[in-house]
Length: 510
Image 1: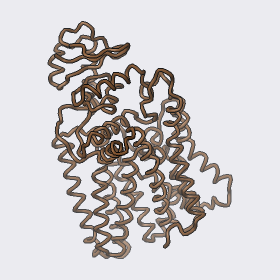
Image 2: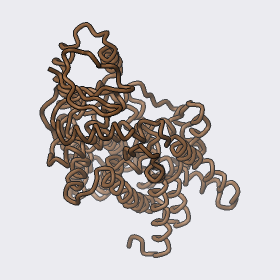
Image 3: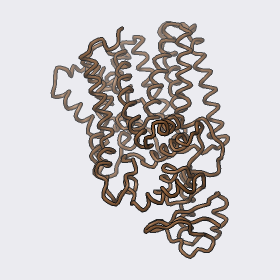
Image 4: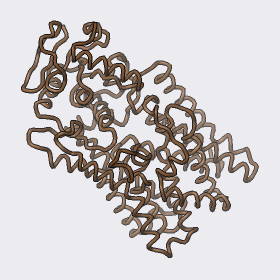
């Protein structure tokens, strides 16, 4: 089949992709254009975890300095580097090459990759749906859809589509590594399907290559892809009782075992502190439950269940792939593992494809009002998040704007104290490593340990810590940012003041 043979179809898909990528970028552009006088825009305006984006900026800073292997930016205990955060190390090197700021490269990459990704998703949709109308409708659902999360956003009661940035596609369009993650995930699924239905070693090895890339960006997604491939293999065996196709998946199984073992050793056995993107403990406390997911995906989930019933009766090879994707991914989301929640990525694409099947069964095309209501309600969560993010882009939000004096202090750090470990308040600590070549000390791993460390930091600033010098030495801290809002460090005899402006002071640990 010639892809995008119909220019009008391609143009409509392209416009949907551009619109989704542009709307995803809107809060950042708005915050940048409306920076208050006396403040500096951090480069981040996000409803979800802006501190995580500073983590990605910090990895890009290492790439900007020429690194191709990652060292934790917020934990001075680990001094070795591993091939992780490769997306951001690469973007950081691009930033240096083109002499553009790190936030600029980040958002340009997000916008560009978002468009390419959605066009790739559309090709994937067309693999399942032959009708252009339903295919374009499915792309809209994927790009803008959500569930009932909008009901509780302004009250702080968050369903999955409003609580997790990777629960819907729209909210991942400003996160380059998640875009690449989902692209490679779809590639592994499609190549695995081709492998099992054509008995081809070529597709088997291509699936393995895509699996290596997926594993190095997000090993948890590779695990989900393997589960889906296993479900597909079982479904095809039940259909024709032919086990001969199993061997063609051996390259993917081999690279999955090797890649999974490698990252298991690094992040768990060696306790490498890779930050929230890579460490499974980042997802502790989140749970995915059937009813919770159903509410989170709202009308789309209800229609998807209708689609599941229809495709279960159909049982074509493509139907088996979609059903295997849905049930395999759904099972993975219910496994009792600490990284449970972060495996949800790409699940929404399967839900949307099944929802379109449900719409066709219910003949919603004949009822434009019903169809319009589905599209409207499925878009309300992302629209509400967009409005809320625009509303909180105020000077009082330290994740969006820094006082100019604090920015000047960060610039001074970058120019004078590179490679040293700095202690700062949680809000400022993430920006230290993002804006300079310093390593910032910050408790960023297990939730309980994080609470203990934050208490120690607070006690240090308030002078209530029994052995402050020991606390600093054990964590290899050489400089401390203090000042208005950061704690009172004046008169502490074991610190030497090395920098001071109106609101910020930087002390050297003697």
